[in-house]
Amino acid sequence: MGSSTLLGPEHPLARADSRLRTLRAQLAVTVALGLVSLVASLLLGSTALHLALGAGAVSTVLAGAVMMARASVRERALELIESGREELPLPAVESERDRLSDRRYRRRLARTLDVISAEPGPREWWAPIAANREAVHAARAELSEIARLLRDLPNVRARGVALATRLVRDGATSPLYQGPAPRLREELGRIRHVLVQR
Image 1 (cartoon, rainbow, N blue to C red):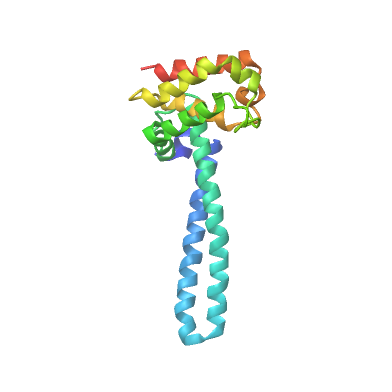
Image 2: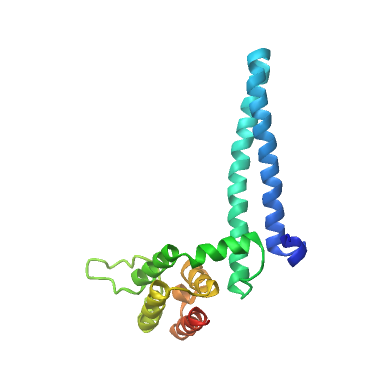
């Protein structure tokens, strides 16, 4: 079942998925055209070679667009997981859920939280990450607890990891960077609750 069937064609994930499929098809056609033109250049000379070079340039641009579209699909899947729809039987959601549940990913995220919550030393007047120091100081125990859960729990809900990921990643809206402390502590409490749910 495709994302447009399950979510509707106007859902952000369905649109991102459709764009990715279109770009992949275009990339396959231009790569094939480039290869055929390259082989033909042995017989037809420079005209076919120029066509092969043009197809190669277009393929490079399309490859970049495919990477951006893949990132967009991943982001939309993360949003669905974050909203509590991690069990949707969609390849993009399943792939993102597996990534979030992976122990190595969770350990990296926990290390990031450890770095954010550490007090900068006298030589580290710069904070390694531009977090709201007042909010972080007030929520240091909660941050440490989330890091511990991410590291130590054998199984966690992907939604909790998605919420922690968003907290760390979204500088413009995250209370980790914007504060205030009560809002950060409330969000950390929500993440903890979701992580330990069975």
